[in-house]
Length: 317
Image (cartoon, rainbow, N blue to C red; front, side):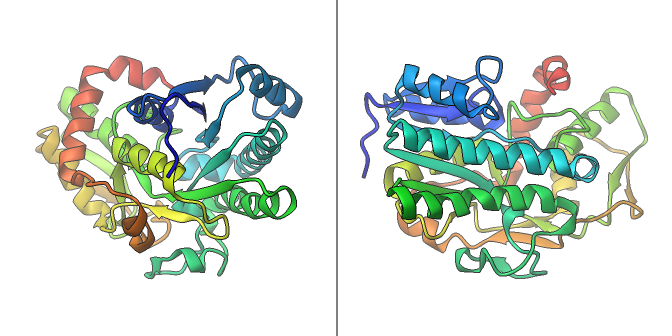
């Protein structure tokens, strides 16, 4: 197990939703987080990235940066999503290996898994089919991270591993309706419906798809434990809760948390996306020790944070 005390840990995307939680988890080990800010250096520029790493000399790296959004964002910008995420992932591998970073942890999402219908997603099935069409560009780009882990290990003996994280939510999420994902979008819709005294809220799809949701602080702790303990570059390790709920149940939790008493209208002309995405966390349980909070409790925390910080949260791109 790696002892992170006193070690420098570079966190790409460290000012983002997950990145801020990772900074806190790293600091709890008395390690030194180095936050790579996009205004200082672009992950799309390999030369500038190498210069940044040579100047800051990190011991370890967690690659949490990404370019993505909800279903509509993925539909409109698949080429940009594919390009940006692929190049960022390859550049961080090349730069970290070049400056002798001891270990790199790549953060993938469950969208990288094949669309298998109603099956639980196991690490050994990672390459057994294509991601769902609605998020395929993002899924393929994230798959490149796992391919890079294997390639850089084989050619350079570089220690790079991948974690596959389920759907995250919590404080500091993106609540911009165009860029956010399901929890952020629904929280904003229901909070604004209460503030504006609306009689109904429209939700996309049928509400029947099953999704796994994990509170961001729990995920960050699990990711840092993977940095400390997980070294198998041949397969990713799933990070999740092992339980899922329907989108309808999620809506009920959110409407209850904000005291919405109106009608929920399901727009079935909008896509549901993949019917089920639940990660098998058997491997995680053997290696990582966390006790995730319930979705209902996490939604309460998230809605309270959003109501308090609404103006700042809505302005975040």
